[in-house]
Image (tube, rainbow over all chains, first blue to last red; front, side):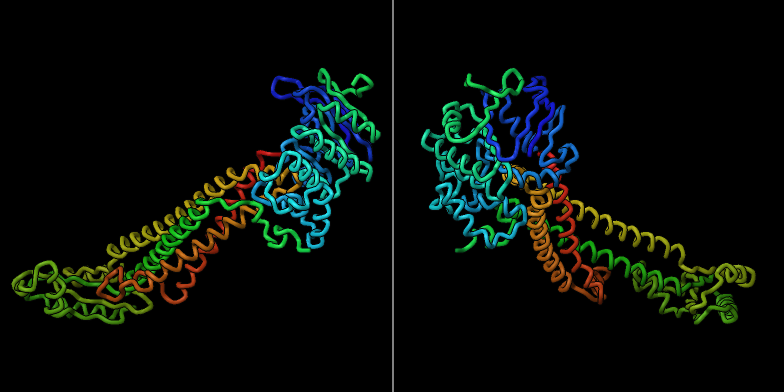
Length: 225
Length: 294
């Protein structure tokens, strides 16, 4: 699915991580954790090809991304569902339109998608907010809408960056449940979070591996969580 | 169930919000530029037409000036007419009457000048046929047989006129190029402002997998339509103004200002050219903005 080999990345003089290797196997569930500023978001952005590594190779769906042009990057992003920490909505479009945007930009025929979209919004508990604008929703509702948009293209991989970062426990549980349901349908899921309670809660329900960025290295976390 | 409103509209432009005043500025600027472009085109056609008319008229006529003592004038005129009669390429030659000569100098000296008391040269008007005249040969013969006669084929008048007309025409082309360039800059600035204002929208579109062409087209289509509609209005207004422009001999050069016949079709291309300029300018601006993100 997504494979990082010997990847290094720096912001200016500051080396964030070095020689990181990661292989996201199909159907697997990963958590990526670590203190703020250690590079969780950067690692997810590298996977989504928003950033390119200084050193190392990133392979997505079997292809070396170094050879990708801008169209190829766009096409890969249509196969990856990304839930950004700040949701990244277009504020003048309704939630339904925002959720449907990936279909629109991929030029897929949308005519038959109306019912599917409503089902999708119902699945994330936002059927009654379809016509609302993003600023009218709460943080948790926005996160669920972002998750709906991330899966509308039936992607093979879901990347979620702090999807429960700014929402209460009940809402976090709902978002986590949705991610677990997606994983049970065969999706590969990688969730960046610093919320250890969320990770423990998830591990009780799903076979999840936990990766931790520490001292610029990516490690597989054990029972010390 | 009805599909989402975004799809029902079938319009990718809806993804990009309206950009307020830049929309009107682009349309108004395109209208103004098209208005000026129509006038520059009319200037081009008019100067070309006037230069051609002047050049053809002057090229077909010549004047022979005979300066001689009063008692020899008639004999020299007769000699000149005889030579002209034998010269190939002469369609017609005749000596101007005293009244015609008086009329020629009246604009400078007034109508009361006693022409017969002044040493005014006698003029012979020469009209050439399609073959043309060997001017140099005719000059040599006149010099040998009628020393007081000077052949003037208007070259020194004609050349500056043609040069002036060419310059005005060049000015017209430069004006058209400047108008086109200015419109490109204005549209480019408006598009850049719109792109900057919609930076977050563009970022989101790229993040969810939109190709550059999709993002750029939303802006290109909008600005192309604005420029074309504005240019259409400006062109129409300018054509109406030129249509009702005063014409006729009394208006002099300005009386012939405008378009004739099929020339009226040329300004109709201006909205299309404006759309092409807007298409290119917006495309360049959009791709420049898109290159800032991955």
